[in-house]
Amino acid sequence: MPLIQSAVEKGQGAGDETLLEHLGDVLDRLGRSAEAIDAWKKAVEMGKKSPYPDTAQVERTEQKVKAREMDGGKIPPVDPEAP
Image 1 (cartoon, rainbow, N blue to C red):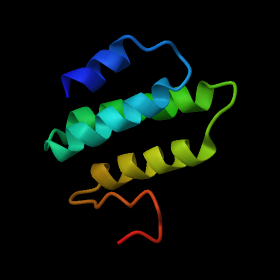
Image 2: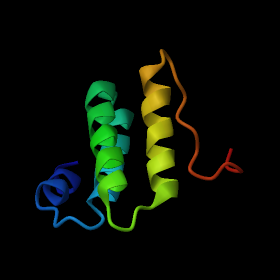
Image 3: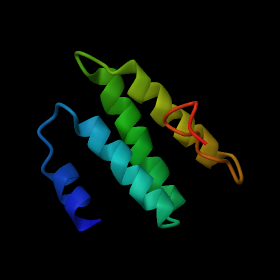
Image 4: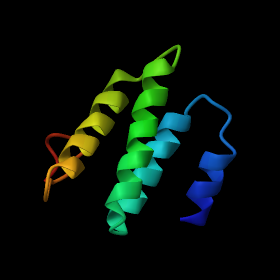
């Protein structure tokens, strides 16, 4: 996890929302849901402010936030067809 944290800290702007989303994923897998939610919320905020927003990434990350904010929420897979 130190490598992804370092990448987020050294971010240059473009694509940082994706790094934050991945950091949130890692934190969530480690059972650190509150920190994951914070990272995902920052990713959504950055994504919405981007001059060329990736709407799929923003929507996916918003779903992760909603799922985790609900008790026992299950994170939806990236691919809706995935198991």
